Length: 286
Image 1: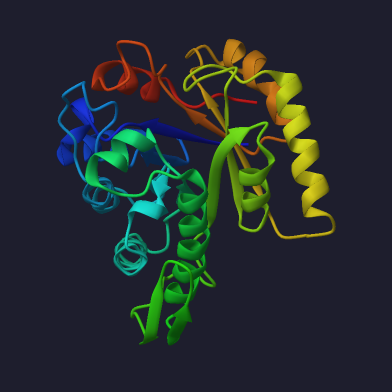
Image 2: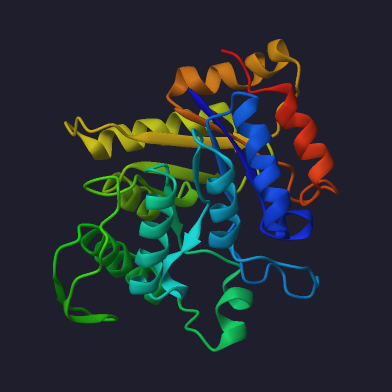
C-alpha cells in the first residue's frame, strides 16, 4: 500500500506557496503523493477563496522531486479536453512524469455546473466524461486526432509535447459505491477512487463494503493483468499501531493506496496546521 495526502483547493490551500511548502513536507516525511481538489466553487453559499488546482500542482511540482501529484478529482465534463490535455502534459513534463490524473463527474452539480449555465443532467455529464477521457488519451499520445462525437469534435489536431508517461499518465476514476456504472468506467482505466455514502470524506469506509467493491472490480476486470489501483481514504491517527489497526484490514481486502483526508464536515478541512501536523507524523506503517 502507498500513501497520499489530500487537501482542498480553498482556504489555507488556496495559496500556491502554502501548497508548495506542504508538498516539501509530504516528500520529506515519506509519503508517496499529494492530491488537491479541483473545484470552482464548493457549496457556493459558503464564500471561500479558491485557487486553480493546476497552478497549485505546478508550485508543488517545482518544490519536489519524488512524490506523485494530481487533482482528486477533475470533473472532465466541465473542462475543454484540449486545454485539460495541455495542462496535464505540461505538468507531467515539469515533474518528469509524476502526474496521476483523477477523473469523475464532480459536484455539487448544481453549484459547479448549473451556476455557470452548464448542463446538469448526470447522463449528459457522464457522456461528456467518457468522450473527454477518450480524447485526453489520444491527445497525450502526441499523434494526430480526428474525432466526431456526441459532444466533441476534433479536426486533425496534434498536441505536443506528448506526456512524459506513455501511453499516458495513470487515470483513476472516482464514483459512489455501490453504483456500478462509475466503477465499470474505472475498470477501463488504471484505478478506482470509490466514495461511500455510508462514510463521507474523511471517514473510514466499512470493511464489508470495501470487500464487495473489490470483488466487483476483480470480476469486471476478468483476466486483465494490467496493474490497477484501488484508492481508499480517511483520517488516521499519527500513532503507527493505531493507524495500522485501522487500515491494515482494508489493505488485506485489496486496497492499494491510502489517501489521508480531513473530515469534510470538520473544522480542519482547509486548515494548514492540522494537516501539516499529520503529514510530519509520517504515513501509516503496515
